[in-house]
Structures are given as C-alpha cells and as structure tokens.
Image 1 (cartoon, chains in turn brown, green):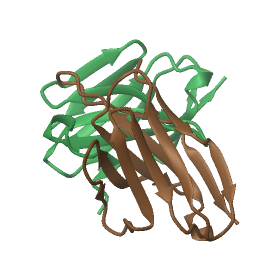
Image 2: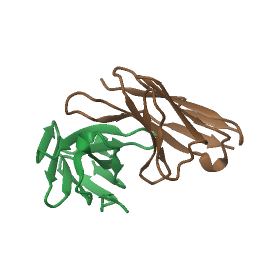
Image 3: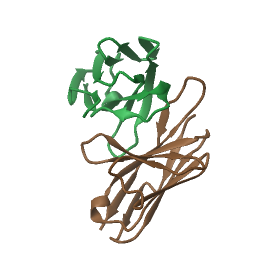
Image 4: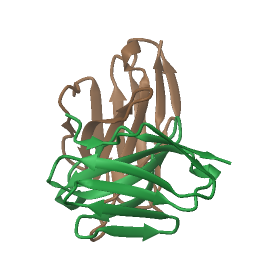
Length: 117
Length: 113
C-alpha cells in the first residue's frame, strides 16, 4: 500500500515553454501533498505544500507564479513549471501524507527529471 | 540553519555486519522522525518512523533509536545486505507529523560484499 506515482518520469522541453507534472496517490487519499526539488548531491528542498481544495503554501524563495500547484482531488496534485528556463532543470519529487491515527508518514513518488534546453 | 544534521556523509560496512546511521536535530519542537532510503534518480522510500513518546521502534532488520535528551536518533540495520547500499535520509516533523518534514543531508551507505 501507500503508493505514489508521478508522470512523466522525465521530460525535456525548450526554454520558455510550460511543463506539467502529475502526482497521484494510488491507494489512499491524501489531503496534503508536497513538492520537493533535489539538486545533484544535495538534500531534498521543500518547494510547497499542497492542500486539497485550497491554495498551496510556498516556501520562502519559491516563486508561486512560476511553480503553479493545483490539488484538484484527494488523489491528484499537479505542478506546472511556467516559462521554464535552464536553471529550472532539476529532479522534482512529490509526496503524499497518510493520515491514519498516529501515522503521518509521507510517501514519495519516483520523481520527475526536468531538463530545459 | 541546518536543523537536522547527518554528520557522516558516507559509511562503509561489511555485508552481514551492523550498519549504524546517525542523525542529530536542534529543534526541540520536532516530535516525529522518519528514515528514508534513496537511490539515484528515484524518490525516497520510507523505512521506519518513531514518535517522541517512544525511544525505540523496530521493523524487521531496521531499528530506530531516539534519545530525546541528546536530540539524537540512529538507524540500525542488521544484518546489512548489498541491497542496502543507498543514501539514507533522516527527517523530522513537529506536531506529531502534521508539520512539514525537515530533511538531513543524507549518508551514503555502501555495503561491502
């Protein structure tokens, strides 16, 4: 149980275009999902917290107009990188949080490798 | 300000022996801790968690110990297997896990056959 999927697993796009990444919890409902970014040889950096039915909460320094997050249902959150530039190239990972009693574990998706040319 | 620290960037252990990974935290509000395993170009895989009301939690080959007074936790893997070779992250959260996770910098574990 507790499987989280991401689509696509990798994407290459031209500078200036927008890219949408989907995150789905496959076997549980997640009122809260998270979006992270990982640079090479570094830890995961939280970008934003996505709550179903409400606006996302962005971490300091993350441009909300550039990284659009939509949490349309209890099993789906999307991250859209708008007007992508080469510096946005990174590994993006989502997670979904279980809420069952005292269990608040976050389960992670497999990640999406974005390369902006 | 690194609130969660993993001071050993790498660790090598012989197959069959015990692997001990350490993690220190500074924020006294943290009360829920998790360990994740990560391979390159993949998302982290959840291993084990512990709440601050406990000082030990065990799941198969994995045991996590929490020393609240020292603000220190450790993950023990025994016996270590080649498939355990990966980067291990500890993470901490407040309000029983309701707050966002703060990750350590990771420790690369290599199991030597």
